[in-house]
Length: 252
Ligand code: CA
Image 1 (cartoon, rainbow, N blue to C red):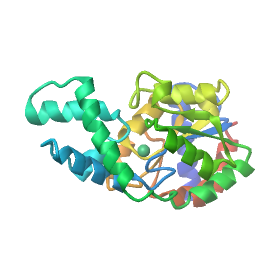
Image 2 (image 1 turned 90 degrees about the vertical axis):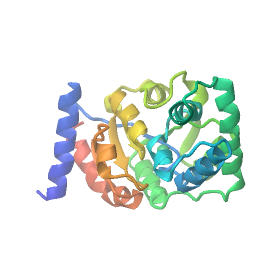
Image 3 (image 1 turned 180 degrees about the vertical axis):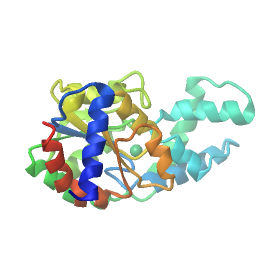
C-alpha cells in the first residue's frame, strides 16, 4: 500500500470514528463557490480592502481570507467594533457591504478554478451529483453557475444566503445542501471548501470535508477547523480523485 492510500484510508477511518458512522457512501459533492469553483478570492480581497478604506476601516488581504464565508455584514460590524469601538446596525453594515459588492462587480470576471472542469467530469462519470453551497446570493452568480456548470448542476441543488438564517461557520448551509441533494445523511456526501469558516461549517455538519488551500493561509488554518483531507490546489484534488474514489468505495 502506498503512503497516499494509507493517508486516505486513515482520514476516512478517523472521520467515521469521530462521528460514529459505519459507512462513507457519497452520492453528492457539495462545493463552496468562491475560491473553490471560481478563482475569485483575490478579487474579493481587493474589493474588501478598497471599499472598507473608504469608511476608514483597515482590512488586510489576510483579513479577507480569514473571514471568508462569513456574512459580509457580520464581518463589517466586527471590524467597526474592533477598530472604531462602536456598534453599528445591520442596515448601516449593509450599506457598507453594498460598496464592497459594487467594487467587486467592477473587476474582471474571475475564471473557473483550474482543475475544476477535470474534477467535475470525473465526479459525473462516477455517478456523483454536484451541489453548490455559497454565502452569496446575487442572481447573476446563480446564472453564471448554471451557465458554466449546467451540464452537471441542477438549480435546485444550489444553496445561497437566502436559503438559511445562519450562515457559515454554522452547519446550516451544508445541512440545507444535504436536504436539497435529496435528504441525504452526512455520510452520503462530501464537502469541498477553501476557507477556515467554511471548513468549520462542513465539519460541524458532519460531512467529510475536503479542504483545498487555494489562498495564502497556512495549512493549519484549515486543518485546525476539522478538515478531513487537505490539498494544496484544486488540480491536486483532481489528480488524486480516482485514488480517493477507489479508497472511499472500500468504506461503502
Ligand atoms: Ca470559499
